[in-house]
Every structure is written in C-alpha cells, then in structure tokens.
Image 1 (cartoon, helix red, strand yellow):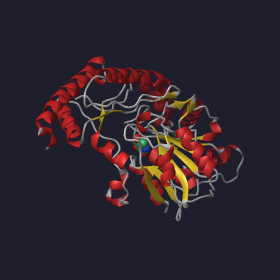
Image 2 (cartoon, protein in one colour):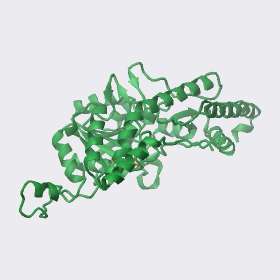
Image 3 (cartoon, protein in one colour):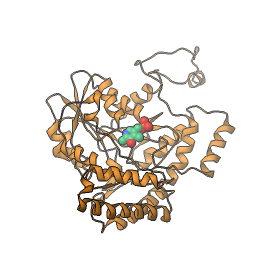
Image 4 (cartoon, helix red, strand yellow):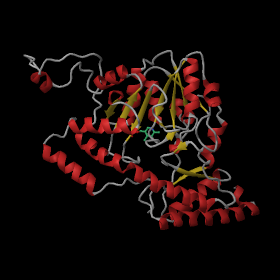
Length: 389
Ligand SMILES: *Cc1c(COP(=O)(O)O)cnc(C)c1O
C-alpha cells in the first residue's frame, strides 16, 4: 500500500532515545528545553517566546484561554479545518464563525475573513492549507487594523515562510503539531509561540497545572526550607512535552530541510505528471516569495462523483488517499446553516494524494499513472453520459 502520510524515523532518532533511557530521566527536562530553543531558532524567535506541549490541539485550547477568549466572543476560522480548532473555541464559551475559502487553494482570502467578521469578533484562527502560507500576511494586517487577535494553527506549515518570515509568527500566537502524521514527528507533541513573552511565560505555567513554580528540586537548590510547598496561578491542566519526544524532535528538526526538499521534488513530479491531463487540476502555484512545507498535495476533479471514483480506483490499486479537512459548518455539532460555496465545491472535488519524504520516484510515477488512467477513462464515461450518474 502506498500511504498518504508516513514519517521518517531511523537510527539517529533511536540513538537519541537511547540517550534519554541512559540518563534515567524521561519526563520534561533539559532535552525538552533544548528542543524548545532549537525550535525557537528555527522560526526566528527568541527562546522566551516558545513553549512545548503534548499536542497541537492542547496548544490550541491553551491559545484561546491565554487570549482571554470566551462567552460573548466570536472567533472566525475557515470551515476547511481541524475539528480540534473549533472545539477549542467552542469549549471556551466563544462562538466559532466559519468563513469560506478559495476553492482551489483551500485557504481563505482577506475578503473571506472580512465577510465573516461580526461586531463580536475577537480573534481569527487561521491554518495554512497543505503547508501553503496563503494570505496570512494580509490577514495579519487586517487583524492589526481591526484590533483583532490572530492565532495561527501552523500544524501543516512547520517549514513554511513568507518573505523569510516563518508561518506561526505573523499573529499573537502560533501552534505546531508533531503528531505521527505530520512532517516533523515526535509521536505526539506540539509547540506554542507567543509574540508577547509574558503570554509565553503564562503558557509555560499553564502547561503544568498552573503551578507558580514548577520544580521542587530547583526550589531545594535555591534553599527553600519546604521545597515541596506549591501554589497555583490558574486552574490549569497538564500539557507538557517529555524528554523522549523532545529528543526525537531535536533530531527531526535537523532533518526537516532534507524532508521538505524531498517533498518538493515529489510535488514537482506530480505537477509535471498532471499538467496536460484534462479533468485534473493541480494546486495553485506558490507565489515567488512563499515557501511551503508541502504537507498535502491535492488534485481537483471535474465533479464529486469523479473524485469519489478516483479515490476508490486508487484504493483498489493499493494507493490510500483522503480529503482533508471535512467542512466544519456541515458537521452536526457546528452546523450553522451557512452557505460557503468555495469550500463546499472544494470538498466535493478535492482528493489529497500520497505525499511524504519516503516516497520513491517509482511510487510517485505509479500514482501519476493511475490518476491519468482514471482521467482518460472518466472522460470517456462523461462523453457517453454514464459519468453523470
Ligand atoms: C494535525 C493537525 C492538528 C492537530 O495536531 P495534534 O498535535 O494531533 O493535536 C491541528 N491542526 C491541523 C491543521 C492539523 O493538521
């Protein structure tokens, strides 16, 4: 089976894990700090802006809370989205308001965001579809102009940049995911960037029960007489990363450039393979000054039935594909009755193809061959009218 996602972990990650075993300290410790510092450097931020977490979803919940978003507030987010982002908003008591997206790029434009703003809007929560930065710079400017907070869910965009600026650092808070299906993986894990270092330091306390001071051992070393005493600043949960995950993450971060390079080559092979195929639309080209992490590659078919037939054809031939992300304004818990035509069209015709750094040229050639075969067959079906059923 050619899978849609696949992490690359090997000897170097194993050696790093071995070191953690040998140190006899598996929890959050020096290695986690080291990973945070390396990640901060990767996004061009100082270490005082960055806090690790146990997942991106947890970081999203944290972000909403840090910005004081709650009952009576609206948060605008694209409907093509990770359900955890909307859950984070709704759980705070705020209302998720879904905006439309460009039907080909699956990212919202500034106008899509603008149209969804209400007089209760407190924040915009963006993602970068497939790793493409989209209109994040313009939307950040719109948020500044309107006095709105901006949260970037950077789960797809770990190495994405606009004119050299890392995605995740355009707004007030950015969050990343290192779960098993991402590019940089730690098993599970996440990262949070806050522009305001004061928010980052609150985030740090909020990832560990809201304790005012974390380490009893540090307190003992600084001569506290009862170092086991505690006090809390907020009623927080426990959302920390551990040294096992961080050790793997540190190695993965070193390899990230090489992963993205390989993914870029796969994307180019797909683009070339589909360029002349009638009925297949490739992702829009990246603007000159944008860099993508190439998290997803997607093709768009003539209509929904054709897309579904392609998914089944590929699956029967051993190629697993999917559509990310099911529209949130159409799921029962969030159904708003809104009409968002760009997203609705995209959700019918879009299919995400296998994209990861372990794909060989011949894997990619096989996917291209199968998609082309389907397209030729489907044109024939459509011309006999059969494809319309
Ligand atoms: C994977 C993903 C997440 C969730 O990350 P976890 O670390 O699994 O919680 C959030 N947002 C987007 C866009 C994702 O793709």
